[in-house]
Image (cartoon, rainbow, N blue to C red; front, side, top):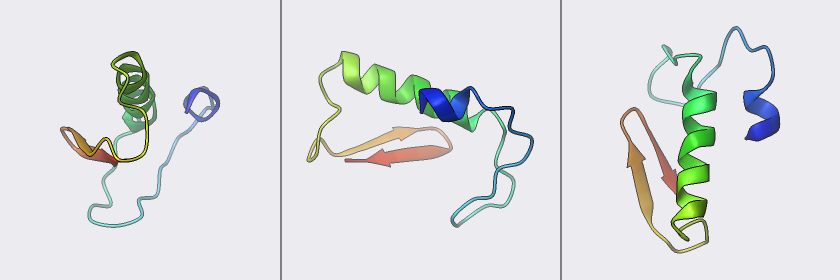
Length: 58
């Protein structure tokens, strides 16, 4: 996420659900992964972590 969030992105195409994905999703996801890591939850089986308009399933 650190490498991807640093790229000059102007458009993000979603996998499903909504076509209006904000450009800030990359930095928001990077922050979410960093938070999960600092909390010791960045591992398989830790569950579904919801962050407003996206979720991370581990």
